[in-house]
Length: 284
Image (cartoon, rainbow, N blue to C red; front, side, top):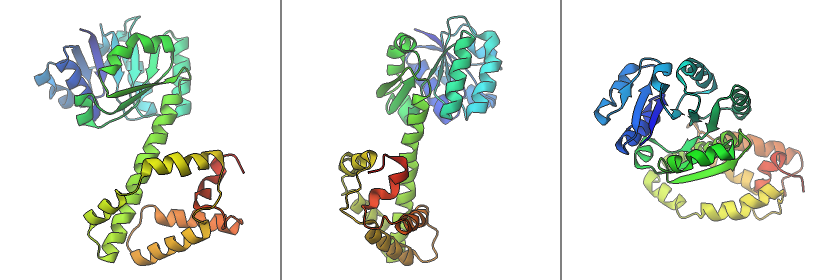
């Protein structure tokens, strides 16, 4: 089995390191809080006091870190211990432009780097479920593809462009966070209306979200805003929602109302409500 390292053992990094050790890999890990690494000793994970110590002798180095600045800092600290053939696999959620710059700098320096962010929580990481994206050199990806596949339920190679996985990770997280915000507002409306929150969520579960993406979502991406639910009528409904909520805090609907008002003032009231995305897509 492989000798690998994990730099960053928060909730997700710890779960990845635990799962790798259980698969039989020799795992060394580092974290700023050494106690988080020592907690993994029960699974056979060896604790390192520095990033350079953690990566010494490792064929793969997995990074699960907070942001771009930390990624750069930790890789810089790890470089004295990196072997010439070690592959850096960065699972951190990072800014696409900085990811592209990082990949270019590392390539010029002779470092092997793939950006592989994930859509999964700690338990999914332990169970090799969820999704992993990958971007960078195809040859490099193919050299570790079978190893990455053991870490996830779905592995998607996005292409050679090094920032593609970073961009798609943000797109996916926008969906998750946006959905959470809308659910919060649905629960607020339920509370204000005397409807049980669980019943409200069950109602929302009746909607075919996948079908909406395949139909209205694709029409939006094409710039097709032929009305089936006019923006002006949708704005009226949002007004009713906000009036129902009263002074309760709302996560998404007030911003949606403000954007609707801008577009109605610009003459788009008779277009489909999906015209909310008009500035992001080709104009009809």
